Amino acid sequence: MQKGNFYSKVYTDVSFEASRTKAIDSIYYYIAKETSSIINRTDFNIVAVSLKDNNLIDFDNKDIANIKEYKKDDNFYVEIKVKDSSVYNRTIEILQRLKKEGSVEDKFFRANASIQMPDSGNLSAYTKQMLTQNALKRAYESLFRVLRSNDIDVNRAVKLTNEAYILEESYSSNEYNVVVETTLE
Image 1 (cartoon, rainbow, N blue to C red):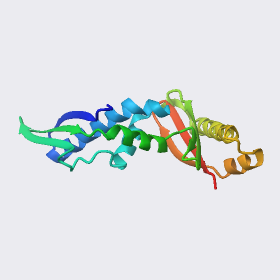
Image 2 (cartoon, rainbow, N blue to C red; image 1 turned 135 degrees about the horizontal axis):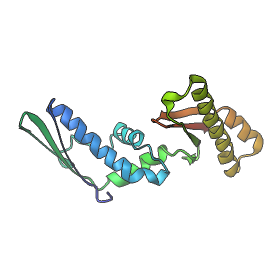
Image 3 (cartoon, rainbow, N blue to C red; image 1 turned 60 degrees about the horizontal axis):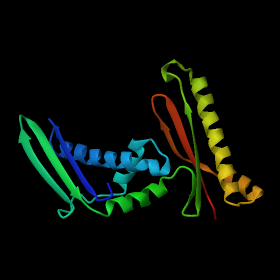
Image 4 (spheres, rainbow, N blue to C red; image 1 turned 120 degrees about the vertical axis):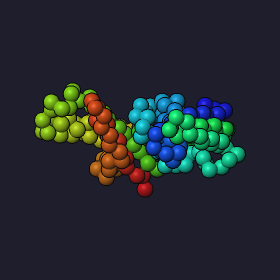
């Protein structure tokens, strides 16, 4: 990972473009899976999308990415070899902006909470709403504690917590996760 060497070989029966997109996504997913534990995140898909949105790797630069396309048995194959030693450090920079807890750039403060949901197909809308509200309440309480642990006085911490907004929400088959953020002015 730290050397910046990545490889992906993918095929689809659709087109070279579809195969290329799938190969690029698999590289981003691998990077996310290997590095997201640095900021205590397990939602690799969200981290991978963020890395991709930040154009972590310049796949159009032939000095960085070697892309080979060929057709075999009515399938479109794409092989991508990446060599970019700066990927790891840039990944760390992007991950810091995705941090769920604590101070980000000494200006933003974040906290998160998640809640396990039993087989959500069997839950009523009211029960789901109560569970998500409980997680949101815990995220705001956690944010208040983060602010206080950063030596922000009680009244200001209360004000900042009240001004906090939901930065990110994610649902999986059995979990709801929410991240709240406030800005120190």
